[in-house]
Length: 317
Image (cartoon, rainbow, N blue to C red):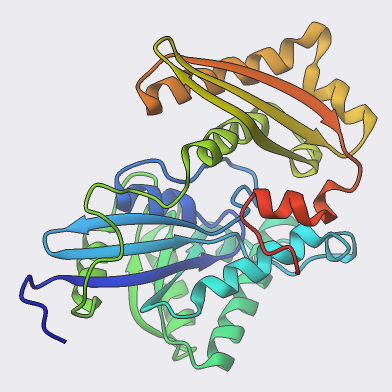
């Protein structure tokens, strides 16, 4: 194919166990917030594409939900099955696959159960699945600032022994360590071909979708335990005027008792969530935002095809 402009383009799937740092990594590489980030697992629910342009090369990153082995409760929810399916579908057709591994969790998982143990088990299963599919990958060992070098080298040896990885990068997506080398390598791997997106586009998500995600991020950060996983946010109304943008959203929860928790005493929790979301949206959109949030109970929303389509997931999972 003739490409006189010298353009190169690659699609890179970024996968890993929940809370490995995939979204933080993609945001850092793109240089903008295209995926929400919290300390809670399973924050990302759908595939989101972030777009990096480096000279004549365009890299399209696919930020995927965390891949995990659902327990009996999660297997019953179409949402959880759809999230895992979306992550693996992101690998199909990708020019490169980057497996992000939470280094401290992998090390702690040797002797701990709980979150670290589950992260290690989920990561090991991902490695086995990639090997079974013959999918060579790049390892991005993340959060390296939390471990001494000798422990990091031991982890690298463990993953090297799988004969799966073509390259290994020690990174901290949070503070930027190692990201320049990873970006350079991915650009080098990009095949010659036309770009998939315009030069000034950073993501494939709509403003309406991103607005819902920002509110869901504030919900995750404000509330604890299981409630964030029982809630979803949809942007119902989006009206632009000379005075700014009016956005009306609905937070759907699964049970009556959860509605009161989201609202808080005198509606204070919802007000705080709304204020934080409104401020960030105004900064992102560059215009005043008038945000109105309602809370509704919708039992079984996580198994509804329409709700899954709203958040960009396959409704047939």
